[in-house]
Image 1 (cartoon, rainbow over the protein chains, first blue to last red):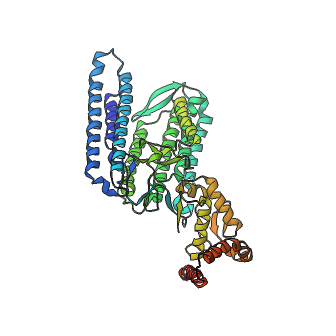
Image 2 (cartoon, rainbow over the protein chains, first blue to last red):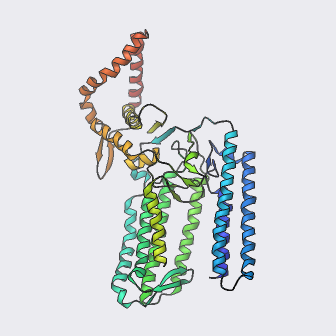
Image 3 (cartoon, each protein chain N blue to C red):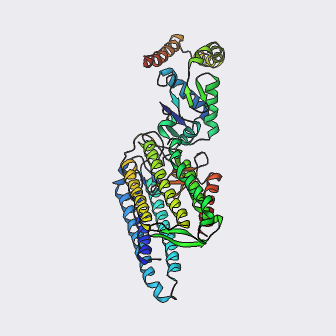
Length: 345
Length: 129
C-alpha cells in the first residue's frame, strides 16, 4: 500500500474523532441531550470539550509516532500489519476517550438544575403530514434499476469472455487486488449493489436522534430526504463503477473513469458535510425535548426496545446507526459484514 | 396537527393517538381528505410499537373517522362518523353518567357543567369556521 494513502487514512480517522463535539446538534454534547443550545457556551461543558480535545489529539499523535518508528524495529514487509494494529488501537482508544467525555457530561448534567423543557415521558408529533411529504419516495429507487440490470447482463453474458483473474478491490487509480475468476467473484459487485439499495431503503424512515416535538429537530424530514437522494446518487456512482469493473473483466477500461467516479464520490462527501452543517448543526431546536440519554449507551450505541426503527440518525456524527434492541438490526449488521467479507475474499 | 403523547399517563398510547386525532377532526385542524402518516412513520416518530399505532388506526377506521387505503395511505374521512352518531350516543351514556354522578356528589351545579360543555363546543366549532 502507498504510504501517503496510509497516513491520509490515519489522519482522516483521527480528525473525525477529534471533531466529534462539532458533529452533533448544538444541544447534544458527547451524546448527552440538553434543553437548549446554551450548553455549548456553558463553562464546565467547554472544559469537558477542551479535555476531550487534548486527550483525543494526544492519542492520535502518540500512535502516529509509534506508526512512524515501529516498522524500523520490525522485520521488513510488516508495515501493513503494523498499520492495521495501530488503526484498531486508534479506534479503541479514541472511543474510550469519547466514553470518558460522555460520562463527564452526564455527571455535569446531573449537577445542573433540571430544565422543565427536558422531559422523559412526553412526545409531541405532527400527524398532519403524509409520508409523501416526509419520506423519500420509492420512485427514486427506479433510477438505480437500469445500471443494475446492465451490470447483471454484462456478468451473465460476458462470463465466458472474462479473464482468469478478477479485480476485487479498487483504489483511486483503479483495481489493486485480484481474485481467481468464479461466479462468486464476478457477482460480488451485484451483491454489494443490492446491499447498498437495501440500506438506503432502511434509512428512509430513520427518526431524528433528538425527539420531543417537531421543533426538536427542525427541518429533519427534508434533511433525511436530501440525504436519501445523495445516497442514491452515491449508489448510482457505485453501480457505474461496478459496471465498468465487470466490463474491465472483459476488456480494459481507461483509469480516468475510476478517477472521475472517485472525484464525484468526494463531491458527495463534501455535500453531505454541507447538508449536515446547514440542516442539523446550525438548526436551533426549541420546545420540549425528550431526555433519552438512557437509550444511548455510552452516547454511542442506540438501544431502545420500544422504538420500532431499525436505523436511527446518529446522535453524534453524520449518518445513521442501528437500534441494537432490534434483532433484525443485528441480522442486517451481520449480513453486511458477511457480504463484505465474502466478496473481499 | 400536533399530537401529544404522554408515556407516563394511565391512558394506553393507542387511546391517546385515537383521542388526539378525534380532537383534531372536531377542531377542524384535520379535514376530510387530509392524509395521516403511515403506521411505520408514526410508530418511529413516537417511538412505539407498530401494533400500537395500527390498533389506533383500526379503531379510528371502525369508528368511521378515517379510511385506510392499502396503496395510497390513510386519510381523514369523518363523514362516516356522523352516520354513527346514534351508536355513539348510546355508548357515551355510561362515561357521561359517571361524570355527572361525580358532579352531583361533589355538589357541582348543573349549569356549571352545561356551561363547560357549551364552552368546549364553542371552542371546537369556533376553530372550524
